[in-house]
Length: 407
Ligand code: AMP
Image 1 (spheres, rainbow, N blue to C red):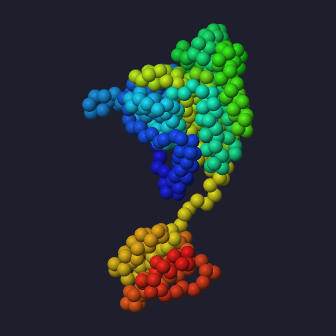
Image 2 (cartoon, rainbow, N blue to C red):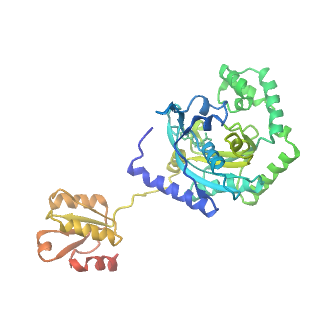
Image 3 (cartoon, protein in one colour):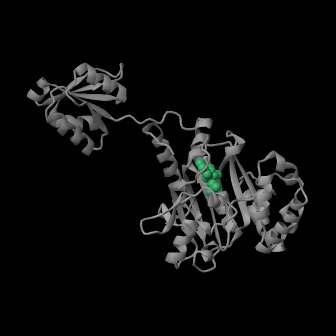
């Protein structure tokens, strides 16, 4: 877990603002769910995922309730839907916030990390899958990222998937797998496809692929999604061995990978269509689709691609207070109230020391309040850039209008 300091927070705000704008323009409303939920909300995600079995920050609270910091947000959003039962479907929501997973920290992998994402509940239409994927694509493009690869797959209908899982089980049982691979196989054969271990690689390469198990509905749904992406000019690769964490995924799943990131941490975000999660959380049978995009990793990709440039925003004005009275307090407040961002010097430091601070602030203007100015009810307005002209004495009552005219 780490601090995000002022030098980086402007980028965080920008990323969130871009995401909020894109989600809002497509009719999504923001949902804010608690950081802490009953553990049962997350165990419903499935017991074959490390996120649920090994990585949760769970504990008993003072009322002896077994709770956990959220490791992801899809389950919380589905819990919220099941609880509030919105009447108008689809329910289209977006979110932003921190998640907690007890993982091994490294570049792009933290124990507290942020995600932005959307979930849509109540519609099974393949065109919605296209919209959802396109929104994430648009978001990366709006940030200025160019090295993002979209990979898609379909897990078919639940029956297709079940038949495929059995075929995988048979295949892996007679293959060479690592000990961890065998343990994963016992829980969920699909997840073996996710293995990055060398000892599992040959068995994974020789595994059957899901496409051979699609029903005609599943094949049709996937074809519609792909033609929609083509229609929007969104490049993608079909990766038949892509599987994702949630046990409830069906039909479309997708992942975005950053071209500049190490392969172990190159997943920028991902999502898919799921069924059964709302039901498992006490709501009516409801189809869902959504994605979660890693904020920390997306910002690393932005840094690698140099998309932000210099994003420090200096204040408009720096007030140099050489008298140490109330005058500078009043001037600074007036400036801010008039819409100018303003910082100031404190502690009655020397003029020289405060001019240094003014320089460091990169404000284009310094306003100097000295004994003479207080006596004559005026201030000095000094342009800070070398070639920006001479300083001027301005009557105190004209200060704001003068700044408005000249800025
Ligand atoms: P997931 O919820 O596991 O599908 O993750 C969605 C996205 O969240 C990933 O593609 C990553 O970008 C990001 N993510 C997941 N776990 C972490 C982590 N421990 N640290 C930083 N980002 C993460």
